[in-house]
Amino acid sequence: MNRRKFINLTALTAPLLSFSKVTESIPAVKPIMISTWEEGKNVNKAAWGILSEKGRAIDAIEAGAIYVEDKISCCVVLGGNPDRAGFVTLDACIMDENANCGAVAGLERIKHPLSVARKVMETTPHVLLVGDGALKFALQNGFTIENKELSIDAKKEYEKWLKKSTYKPVINIENLPVQVENKDGAFTMPLKFDDGSFNHDTMGMIAMDVSGNVSGGVTTSGMAFKMHGRVGDSAVIGAGLFVDNEVGAATSSGVGEEVIRTCGTHTVVEFMRRGYSPELACKKTIERIIKNNKARAKTLQVGFVAVNKKGAYGAYAVQEGFVYAVKTKQVDRIFKSAFFYKAPKSED
Ligand code: GLY
Image (cartoon, rainbow, N blue to C red; front, side, top):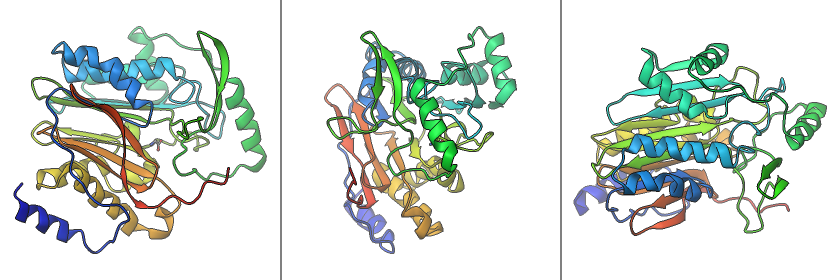
């Protein structure tokens, strides 16, 4: 994009004044792996072996998901907080460079929902399987059923929640502290870590392989204490994830309803198709969320991260606090997303 075109595009965004400045990342050399939140750095690492060995982007996405579903199953999948009826229900989706896609929603007791979504993509004529049908399909395809008990802390949080039964997602916190186990035994994953970072339950991933092909995936247990049967953006192609191999890809985290209302990631990709940088494309889409209902937007978080075909990447969120991890041959770090509203001071 030449300078004049960039300035023109920036001018088009003037009606909504935002807090942080738009910047463009330096295009990275392929391959590249991008994942949401702090844990994304470990997810990128888990996927990197495939990308660095000239493997396919879609395989890197699945490897990243398997890592996170295994390692922090506390907050991404089965150990996460339940819905209002007490069930942990999982949403996931995957999309490759040929517009092949698959998804599962409301899937219970299966550890690797993104792998089930991939099976839907590769072995069925459909895109999305839900609930009991998705579970049956998973079992028919060799996935094993897991314990249905809630983790100790999820049970505690659920019981606490039942007393008030209010539903108010907290900005930058898509889940609550839960008990996890690792090789050192059981411990409670805190709401906020010592370094100030939070745990998060939506893992969105984008990969570009050495051939320049782009794929993406999302895996989550969704919003804690959602209504039973509620499906978020993470199972909806065009909302939580969209890939167009000619343009790039985008993924999201945050309140899924807002992302679905704007066909969020599809909108981001379409803005990139029109020449906007990844960050500006994310910003334009976030501005739609804010314009739809400013009062509502002030109390919630949505973050988009995107990469274009040149390997440039960027992100934009409603609120301060959204972060994403990038791995290339030169870069391996967490970036703070640009944002619209500055975060209110933490109360703790
Ligand atoms: N972004 C996850 C959800 O809304 O369920």
